[in-house]
Length: 259
Image (tube, rainbow, N blue to C red; front, side):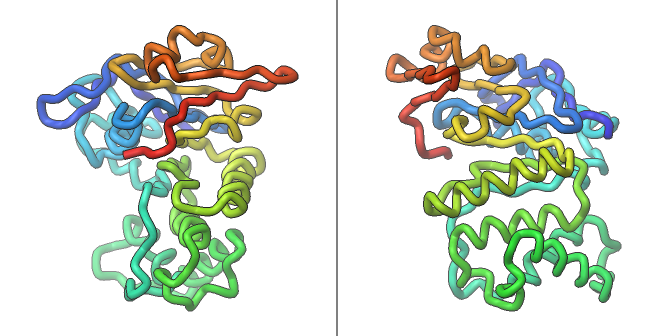
């Protein structure tokens, strides 16, 4: 696949700049984790690449398509947004929600066919939710809803996957299971993945790059970024801690709620 590229990107809303000088490349087999304190611009960055928010300046290229304004290739990115629990009376089944992932790829007003329903059922099965296929989406657990949204993202055979706080709002066991599925998609399928998270630690053995953003600072690199405690303090504040135990790094930021 061709890469997703951010070149000297400035993000924000209206005339308000949140972060600038953002440069990175997401390629096949990459797992890039975006970390930083609340309000740093992590979600804004993802939405800018997806075309939901326009860049203030700089350049985005999506799978070979210059994407400063409109880029049809953006529909080839599977996106799992950060959401709270869906209300229990939400009038759609799990199958309905997963099938909605095909809408960007279909002609307007065209109907869903049998083959497409089989695709949805396969994606649901891959996420371990076959027994829930006809259940109301809002009545599923938080972890099941998250996995349903991944099935929705996968049904369009994406060239890349973006996750925004994929394990927020779910219990510890569900979060662990969910992270294993994300890593499996990267390791076995080779799908490049971009993750916004407050907890980089579970991904450290698998990530290829870390993007740290906050307080007007941006830096992209490998695990060595976690050794630069002075830089991390300039982003998170004095409370940040990095532990190295038996060659493994653990970032303790005290930052557990993204907005």
